[in-house]
Image (cartoon, rainbow, N blue to C red; front, side, top):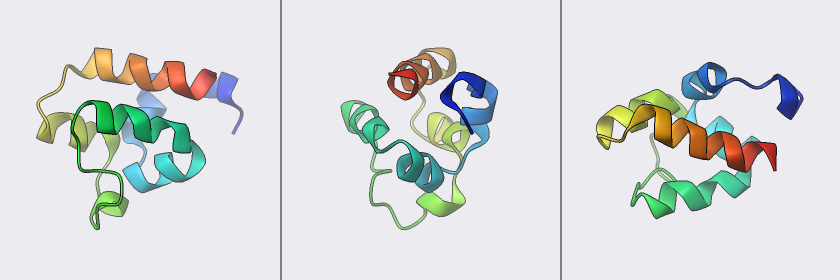
Length: 72
């Protein structure tokens, strides 16, 4: 999948471990928000949307930040 065809909704639905495997540079954002997702045993079972909810983040802002990292 090319970076230009990625949408925020596709990213939101991705499992965290899949996202980190495909775009390891996104780990910085999880760490910035003090999220334990990087290296977490349940990352293969939680979507980005799940993590946003668990950590009570602003969905649109977090996804926008992810998209910036992915498109670089």
